[in-house]
Length: 216
Image (cartoon, rainbow, N blue to C red; front, side, top):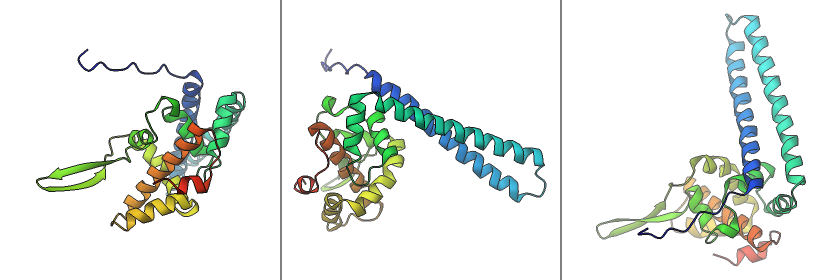
């Protein structure tokens, strides 16, 4: 009562269904990779019974088959929803954003129309800057208070965007001139990439490199 908090938006049914299926697909992929790693280790051991190897290979085939089925269901789900389909098409116009990254953004991030600004997404993912003060000294660091799983999944997309998207490269170059290099540069690329994706969705316009180059 003291804070007078605003009510949270009601969950979007299409987004929640997409989130559930995409997470299940990700789980299948992770389990299949874990089984492959286990099989590789088992194959190196001279004491592994043949039955164990057969079992692991069957588990991997089953998981890969279920993952392929989940991929088909994801495609059907998006194709059957005009809003999801149009937003997916917009995201895929952004260099560095592939199908997996686009589905991750659509399912896991707050809808743009319910967010205060494009800076909400970097904050949600934990790549927004915050100021640290110690006595008379102050410096900026990443907040890292957002979702670490989203940062992990978006890492490679940011690496690709850093090379393929001039707007992202220019943004990171400005930060590099101030000493922000290495992994911090990739986090900065992720920050810019998220804001670009937010922009194409909120404006309902495909990615335009000239427009995004003009924004800081």
